[in-house]
Image (cartoon, rainbow, N blue to C red; front, side, top):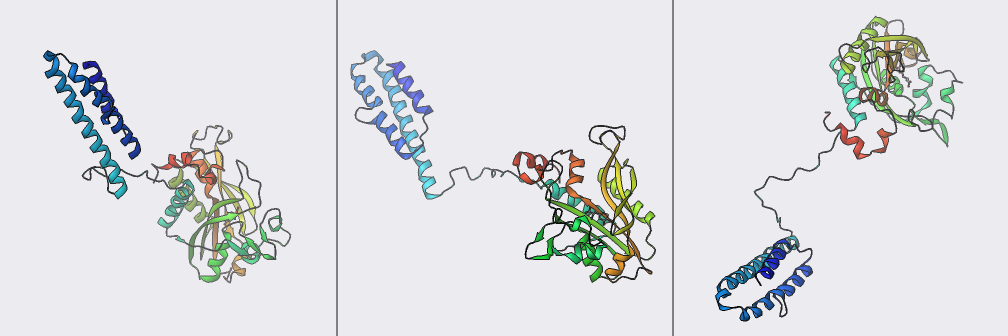
Length: 339
Ligand code: DAH
């Protein structure tokens, strides 16, 4: 008998009701007319008199336990029904899962922050643009391949309207609106008609920079970009400028930074060259200045443009561009500790 009572006590202690109905079934199973405890009380009559005291005590204890259990479990359901907080209100609140900033935003904010420290302001412009702001004003010849449907998304009804392929269009808008000196950085989303792969996407982000004043030189640009590279990738970073071509700058260059993974010795990230390409730049072509109403005899300037995803890839060694667009929480959560 003692053993049976013990087993019942255990069962009651472990019991957790899932629904009010489940709780009622539990009550009937234990305290109902044919309930386990009711039957034990019946059997109690047959217990030898010298054991009665001890067994009676055990039975009563289990009965009290059952009643307490019924009461506390019922309260849980009552509170849920009335919307009352069942938890101890004096406990500190449970922290929600904190979100994290998107790595593209983190990289973009860092780039902008570095340039605003140098006195650049942030300028914005539309994603749906016209041919003038994306191509013509930027000195693209009429048959330039970028003007091709293969590279640019055009609006079918009107080929003059297109999705901007670079944020250099904001450079044009700024020059049209503002008199020099001009010092702006232009972040934004850009669109290109590309097949999506680990290294290319039809949507990505750029930050473009533009500096126009009297006597602005290539050396000014180089110094500014060196400062940027060291702030972004670390103080020991070196830069290298390679001659290149863009319709809107002359001369034009592409800038590499020394690979911070191998310190320039060569690894698979820098393809054993010791250098990583990060941006395009150059001295603004006088044709561009004139197209935007700025006297190219009085003013000169430099411009540069970079892909935000590319910089983020280099910073965090993410090798597949698609990860930035899939919004897989497991990927994004890794950036929680980066501010
Ligand atoms: N617009 C260029 C691109 O999308 C990037 C660029 C290169 C911008 C050189 C510039 C520049 O302003 O001077 O690839």
